[in-house]
Length: 451
View 1 (cartoon, rainbow, N blue to C red):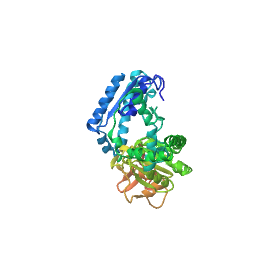
View 2 (cartoon, rainbow, N blue to C red; view 1 turned 90 degrees about the vertical axis):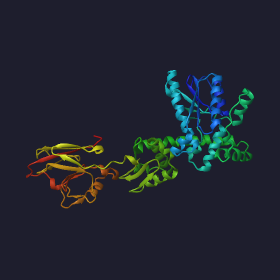
View 3 (spheres, helix red, strand yellow; view 1 turned 180 degrees about the vertical axis):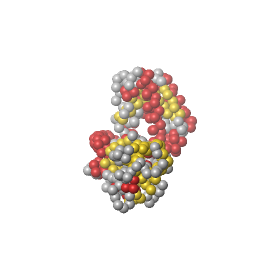
View 4 (cartoon, rainbow, N blue to C red; view 1 turned 45 degrees about the vertical axis):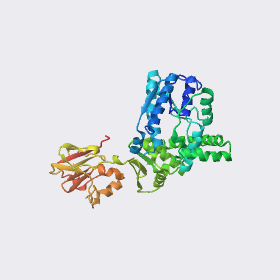
């Protein structure tokens, strides 16, 4: 967990567990590490008691001779703003500042930032309590795997130690005091209730309950890690991920998976594309799995996400990244008009013999036209497609061309007065066909934004 000579940042609250961790690190009992430093985050939740914790940690670090950083942060305000509970909000803030502080320590030591370690004082009782809390409130295998030994740069060297042994080490071996957080005894909090009432009952049934459950958690974590690696591989192969923008799942391939693996694959891809998607509930993931087999599936999700099924794809995107409709713009002949996110449209006079090919470039009979209008699809729009006798709705032409519903507002429509000249990228009008009688031809080209 602690590579030799690597900088170590210890998160120290002032409680017994983190004080023991710091003492063990400083004494070299956990190995020959690099420079040790301390981070204490004052959550501003317990008034004078919190200030007392900060002062205690600062004094302890000075006594041991390691640098200490104390951060004051209003966790309650952050939790309200982000819609989090206090425990989750506090954890996010601690690790945010821990990453920043460790980066500075690694730079100062002249080592790679990935070599640094954030040491946290979770122990076996924490693992047991977390497992029971998640079992009570509901969780999948990943949640029931409880607290891991390592995650990225975060390490937990005391995870196989019991709370009682840690306190005996401080009290009996070192005579080292620590701070007690009064809220730890508040049984209106689930963790305190589990610790004081549920664990003792389980231990009466099985005196080795904590050791037994810890082994079960290890087995569950190993199984979960294997399934997670498989899900990551499937997410890579069966989904096209654009971080912070969209995911396109291949419905046919995802449907070849067992439902359990399909759930994991979808959740893994969502977490890779949208970090905030970790807050999606199991019911949202189940709905997406159901949506794989439904044509026309659409659902709004938390975190500003929307899911839609389109032409063999299940697309999850940020709701505010929907393409904007093309705004009405004049297209001079010759000339160019900027269509914003839809790209641009170019009109240039050419020889009638210069017949453009391809969906995004066409040659038309310009007649006496001097100016065209480019805008978006309107309700009821119809045209006579090239090579056809009757007219068709433009919306039907877009469906035939398998243009996703979400992208249709961004498809330019070129108009000559009330007549439609070209549904860009799809079909040109028969009425503007270049023929033997054409005296003036014009080439229209749509340059998409990505081009």
